[in-house]
Length: 509
Image 1: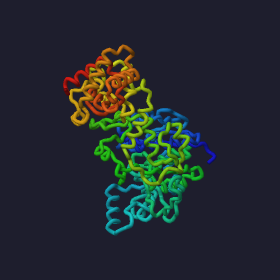
Image 2: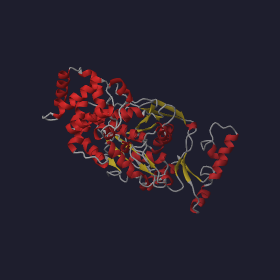
Image 3: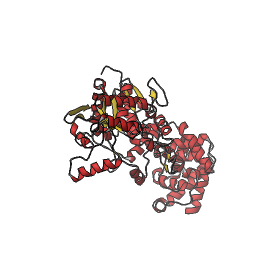
Image 4: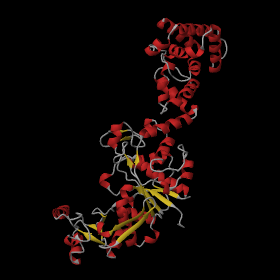
């Protein structure tokens, strides 16, 4: 293709953006950047009955949060404005009328009751498909079966009508999908879709074709649910005379339920206790709040990395990718045809990896804030040390403070199993000897010095250090397992360490 690559993400503002929509936007973005092209954002809001206040702003904020940069479109501007379809009504009306004038579309005046009756007749006759098509249209109320003067009279009287595509009866419609290969559909399987509704607004089918052409879109990368409509869209390009510049299509695999059977839904997320939207969303009509990846503690880098590998494989063992690495590695030919199972544990694993990579200084302020909100005194320096100690043990940044419970609180109970197994005479002696060594300790109370002091004390007491370390941890934290004990003591300080050692001796005897 000699034209500059231009892709678009075209969501509808009917509620929060599904995480699958974020993946669609991501694949468009990766492809555009890889090919040196541009990405557009278009808001498809022609279904005014489903419009939800705040949804458009939510879409813009979601894309910004995950780092998808829009080159042109809603919220950015550009030469093809406006980028809201509701503001482009006259453009669609003009093209729909052109199709009517050229005999490729027609006016239809059928009422909802008449359409229901038609479908019922076809169902009772065991017709292959109960739809408005090349055969049934000749029994309906439209400009193909009515006299021109009757059509004009009805329109002049303000009678509601729609414009339908006049689908050919016997033609093969073909398209070469970038992921799925050749798709062949006989036109008899395509119904006469409504192109322009009675309110004068277009359906998706007309609007997206007209906009993609006028906005010079070269590749349409969208969800698998639009694959059945793709032959219809090819027909529209042909009828509108734009087949030579028709974009290439790529239909992405579905995101599946965690168990793998069926499309992922909000109900699945609610039952599984995980988010399905990028950001938290509060329904403006009901006030019900739905969880978001951001508010649950997922980092945008981790979210993007997780989504990128849901349906695409780089063909290597690499799992962690920066956005630049994703762009460099992305190949749409490596996108799978089969659906991708949504594994939230994998998302948590990615977040764990990215939390580990975060600078301690970036995470520490939140730890300090949580500590102070809980009534503890915590300097930023202490928060940084806590972060360094614990960030490798958590999936989410907000869990660092939770994990730090034994740092802020001296133990009030001791693990009974460890007491039984490890709290013996050697352990008691070791704790007492170490306490005494710390009371006379005069240097910097840092991990290396503490380790050296402990080693010397145990050597002088004739105690094998390896045998008493779990008991030492028990005395200091109440548990037999946890993060680096020397760093833990450094953070809680010498006085608190001595105090806890004394308490363990008094409590456990």
